[in-house]
Image (cartoon, rainbow, N blue to C red):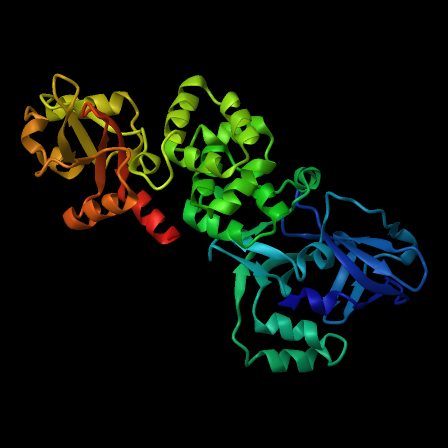
Length: 412
């Protein structure tokens, strides 16, 4: 096992044993091989840097590199934005540990040697984010590699396999050239992804959001702190922002737009589909800290005479979102609120049993102008998971869910 810091600054000799220079930088070509050290940049005094290709290396050891060719066979160095530079782009930089679900700083890289036909190919296997890598960096050039290795043996390692590393590149053009994929980020829980984004700079946050699909971006955005959420959306192109907002629940969109300047909110509403925009505008009419401002208009509402099987078939046909499937709300023949049924009771009922016989007691609902304190009191007293919001005619117009209650209590 070699370390990148043991090769950066190493002396390089050609096939004739002549000193060529020192390793100034190492490059990976992500589009070709995502973890292979494809090039070594060699520098000597004021001479123009040279490049040694991966298949021109015959021997590597801490502090020493030998080549298979003469110096005259080496090409001149020309910058290439499609290459990932070990010293410039990785060491001391922040990366995302997708396995540990956090942002970490790179102290060193672990390299393995693959020997083939007299050449040595180096590949990055792990990223060192612990104390051993930090000590190697600190003692580089001060102590010999053998002394440094003895010191680090007693230090606890913190290593991340290269396959769990997700790079952060704010520049969209360079992101394309490096072919950085954020597929691994899309597999994270939205709350974990939001925690990661909150540790990044504004430019890095925008880069992450810009690279995610609309649904994943919406889920992560919903988990962000309100202030950061508004900052991210305000910097997005209106068309892109509207596409993301379409994937969010109406109450979340309303809360977000309330944090934005009025002209920005109007522009985003104009970009959204008419029906979604109408729902959000209705929610924006409710005063802050009221039940109406806390509710969502996405909830399951069926007739109290509907049977269990009929309701389940209706849910399947209409593609109801999973986060709406905690409670089914009921209305009578006059479209007035008639109760609520927990999905657990629904699933255990007989196929032809009407939902009216499964309703919870007592019948609980709240008007949209009720205060947050009244909402919290009902949730606490009756251990609710959701609560119907009804208008002056006792018609269901929305629902408040326990996750929104918890979020609002935390915000206090």
